[in-house]
Length: 185
Image (cartoon, rainbow, N blue to C red; front, top):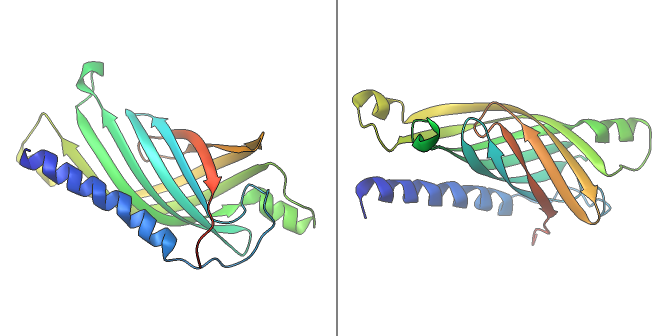
C-alpha cells in the first residue's frame, strides 16, 4: 500500500467515524410524533454532482422541533478522463438548519405535512488530494476550512423519504434517501 493511499484511507475512516460518534453522543431532546419528515434523528445518504461526482452522508437531530443539528461527510472526485484534475475532495462539517415549513406549521398550529425545507450552514475541515500533481503548491492547498450554506428539501412518498440539497461545497447538487434512527438514550 502506497503512503498516499494509506493517508487517504486513514482520512476516510476518520471522516466516517466522527459523524457517527457525534450522532451517538447527542441526547434526544424531544419526543415527536412519528411520520413527519423532521421527526427524530435522521440519516441522509446520497450521491451528488458538480464539479465532479461524489457521495454525501448526513446526520441530523431535531432541536425544539424547528431547528436541526447537523453533521455531514462529503467526498467528491473529479476524474481526469472528463477533463478534470483527478483530485479527491473530502470534507466533514457540523452546523445547523432552520426547518422553514415546520416554523410555518407551528405558527399556524397545524401538523406537519410530507414536505420539509431546511436552510442552514455547516463549517468544517476540507481535504484536497491531488493524485496526478505533487507540487509544493498542491500540498499547501491540501487543507482548507469549508463553509457550506445549504438548502434541503425532503419529501415523504410511499413510506420513504427522499431529499435534494444544494450548496457550494462539492458535490454541489446532492440527492438521495433518508431514514429515521432511534438513539439508544
